[in-house]
Structures are given as structure tokens and as C-alpha cells.
Length: 173
Image (tube, rainbow, N blue to C red; front, side, top):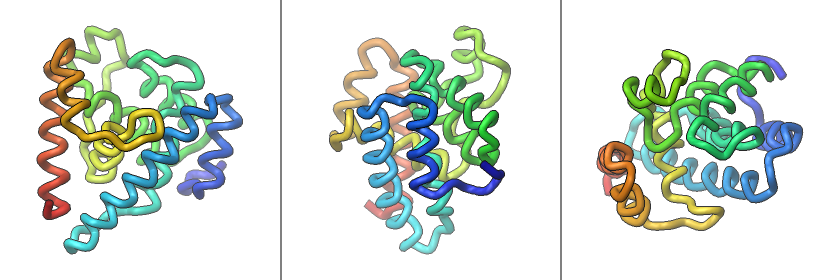
């Protein structure tokens, strides 16, 4: 694949080629659909959003789950995407979507390569947030995800709360 954004079909084919389980593919499609809904709402408020990037990033955000189901699936997915020639913006979405963002300190503790693992661009934030709204392939209230994370991952829960506040503000909700 070239350095241009993949179409929906190309992204799904890349998931299949890398042997992502069907439930991960269905999850990724559900995340892409909700991410596009969020991005369109934000765009309707006059804010520039790259919808094609949101769709590609959302479809490929869990590419690394073809190799691991641990928290480092974002790192693994970014490596696969790079080897497949995906554009840097897609690689960043994959790398930065986990848990609403992984701080530099947490990444160091996890033994990850030194890098940025927190969503920075609007498209990265939209995909990370949309991922938290989908459990399996069903939409869930964000409060359930935040409550679940409060137990063992207070920093992640707080990061998702901030992401929720920022995205809903941008949508005008």
C-alpha cells in the first residue's frame, strides 16, 4: 500500500490479511461508524476534521490485536501499519488510542520505546474517544467505561473523562 489513506475496504482487508479475529474487525467497524458520527458533528460546528483519516484510523486502531491483546497492542499495531506503508497520521492514531492515552511515565514503566502515546490531533482524540464508546460492537455509555477504569486505572479514567469533556464540548453537546 502507498502512503495514502486506505479506503474502508482496504483497511478491512489489511485487518484480515494480518489475521485479526472477526470480533476485532466488527469492533473496528463499529468504532469507525461512531467516530465518523462524532467527527461529522464536530465538522458541522465549523471545525475542520479529516473524515477520511478518522475512518482509516478507527478501522485500523486495533490492528495490533492480531499479535497481542495486552495494552501494548497499540505499539504492535503501529509497527504493523508502518511496515505496511500506512501514512504517519494513521500510525499515530493506532499508537495513541490506547486507554485514552498512555503518559510518558506509564510508557516507560511498560518498557515501550520512547515516544508520544497520548492522542494529540483532533482525529487521534476522536478515534480514542470513539473506541471507549464501543464494547465489542455495541455502544455503551462513557460513564460505564470510566467507572470500570476507576478501579485499577485511575489515570486512564481521568484521561477518558477529559477526552469526553473536550469532544462533547466540540460537538456542542
